[in-house]
Each structure stands twice: as structure tokens, then as C-alpha cells.
Length: 476
Ligand SMILES: [Zn+2]
Ligand SMILES: [Zn+2]
Image (tube, rainbow, N blue to C red; front, side, top):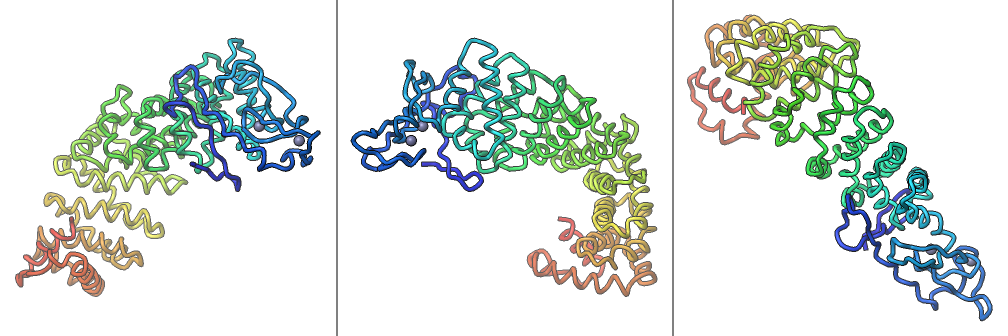
């Protein structure tokens, strides 16, 4: 039995006959409950009355529990159990059972009443148990196919309320909730702001978990998310781009995102210069994820950036109130800097990174991205002349930084430069910062020996061969 714990209570969600996914199945039948044996109950659990010869036991057809006549007095048809005649149900089950039944009506206002009622139950912790046990989830999924905007509004807000409970995610995904949300989002777009917000927020929550993110992709989540990114309603756009960023953490999604007909990458680049700083931040973050996969796509991103007017450069040069914008722009720059074929195109960005380095001092995250960008640029020999001029700043801000990853990136830069121009760089280091460089180098070399003993063993005694070999290890 797959019990789920929600807010302290144990719940056994209703099972349906056949596949648990009820999306686009017009009707589903729930597996009938097992009846609790008479002898297990000496009193009614709802009103505590003791069963006697006069006070008889009755079984609720919906939950299978033993109740007294008063607590089990009502009779309603239960088509969800395949019972078309009126059957005995207990007071605890009646409201939800009736709503589930009403959802099958052909009358639009009855369906609306069902959607509204179930959605209300989904939002109250003490009612969630009955909702799940009696097929409320499956009913909300089925109602996603109803062509009535008010019904869809209740369905989306109800499903969103359920999605906020992580322990329910597996049950929800299996029942077809993601497909239901995607269908509603594709249907209403951003014409209904609250529906779009509830729907996208639900997908965003799912996308925070690795296995569910894959399920969101399988169930068709990428297209509705992509379309809603360009909504002129900022709240919708923000949520959608954030969700797209979570999806883009999986490099396998990049082909679809780069090749879609909505020009997602160039639109994201334009949003990197949007007047709204939150939009800038999430657009740059998503682009940073989109630059972590194949070289081919980093090249595409650089080209798109040139044709949209160098938005990345503008973002990196700006002085926003929100410091995360610069961090994300620097992270994206660092990722793009590895692209060997784009070094000419990236020269202006390299200059900007060099200028920004002294200004990043107090922001360790920014300093780390900028130093990583410089280290990545330093892998390409053609940048050596520009980068040699940054050595005093690198010594001052990076090697003396208390942050070990900033130090490591700084040393990567120096070692790469030493490989390209051993004589010039070593004399500069001796003049400008040997007191910082050598201790840092010793620390890093020790770490490398510990981590990569294979690559370090057999280091040459020729100094510039040492740099070369260190470079090949440290740039891995
Ligand atoms: Zn009773
Ligand atoms: Zn019952």
C-alpha cells in the first residue's frame, strides 16, 4: 500500500482501474474499497455511539468504513465506483463523493460547481485527505478537458494547491496532472492571468526536481512554457523564463530550445536589456544554462548576440541595482569564452571583463565568474597580449581573495599565460606579485597532486614544460 504523508496525516490516494494516468480518459472507475469487517468496530468512529442489537452497523460504499445509521443515512449514485443506483455513503465521504459524481454531469453549471468545490477542498489541509482518497485528483485531471474558462480556473488553482505538497508529486504526475496543466496553458495562453500564473507555477515546482523535470518534458511542458516567456504580463513572463531556465539545466533540451520557431535565444538576449531588472536577471540566468552544453550552441549564442546588437555586452557594462544581473552576465560570458571559433567576436567582452574585475572586489560571486571568464579566455593564445595587462589586477584581487575558487581560477589564468609567453609572464610575475603567486601556486599544486596524481607525475624539469603540463591538468 502506497500511503502518503501530508501535514501529519497518512493518506492512501484512490486508485483507478487500469493505467493511473486518467488524462483524456473521459471516464475512470475507482477500485472499490475493502469493507472493514463488522467485528473490528464496536462503535461508530464518526459519532462514537456503541453498536448494539438496536444500533446496527452500516458500511459506507465509498470508503468501506463501518458507521451507525445516522452517520451513514444518505444515498447517492456512485458512478465513479461503477454504481449507478443510489448507494449508502457516510457523512465524512458525502461531500467529495458528490462533487466527483457531479463532475460527470452534462450540465455546465453542475460541472462548474464540482470544479469549484474540489478546488476549495484542495486548498485546505484538513480536507486534502478525503479529496485524494475519493478520486479528487483524477477528477480535476479529467476536468482539464472541459471547454469552460471558469472550470479551468478552478481546476488550475486546485491542482496548484496540491502541487505545493512535495509528498504528493509522484501521485500527481502519475495521475496525469502535468499533461492537464500543459493542456490548459496551451488553451488559454496568457489571456487569463491567474490561470497562467497557477499553471506555470505548478510546472516550475515540478521542474525543481530532477525526475519530475524529465516528466514535464515527456508530458509536453516545454512548448507552453516557451510561448508564455514572451507574455507582456511581467509576472507570467518571469515565471515562464525561470521555468525555462530550470528546463535548460538539462543539455538534452537545448536542441529544441535553440531550434524552436519562437527565436527563444534572441528574445532572451533582448530581455537581458529589458527595463525590468528581475526580467534581466532571469533571462541572463536561463542563457547561462543554455551555454553549458555543446560548443555548437555557444557559437549560435555568440552569433545571435551579435545580430541582436550585443545585449550581453550592454548588460555586463551596466550598473544595475540588482547585483545578480552582473553575476549572471559574467557567468554567461565565462561559458562563451571557451568557444575557440568565436574569439574575434568576443574581444569586446574580454575588454569589458578586464575593466569590471577591479569593481567586483566586494562581490565574491561576481569576482569568481569574472576570473573564470578571464581564465577561459586565457586558453586561447590570441588573447595573451590583452590578458598580460591584467596580471597586476589578477594578483591584487584574485590571488589575494579569501575565496579558494577565485584563487584557483586566477592561477589557471596565470598558468595559461605562462604557457603561451613564459619569459614575459614570469618576469612580470616576479616584479608584480611573486609574494602572492608562489604561495598560491604551491597550494594549488598540492591540491592538483592530491586530486590528479596521474597528470602531475613525471613533470618535466624544464620550467615552461611544467607550465604546459600544469595548464593541461588545470584546464580540464
Ligand atoms: Zn455515527
Ligand atoms: Zn465513507
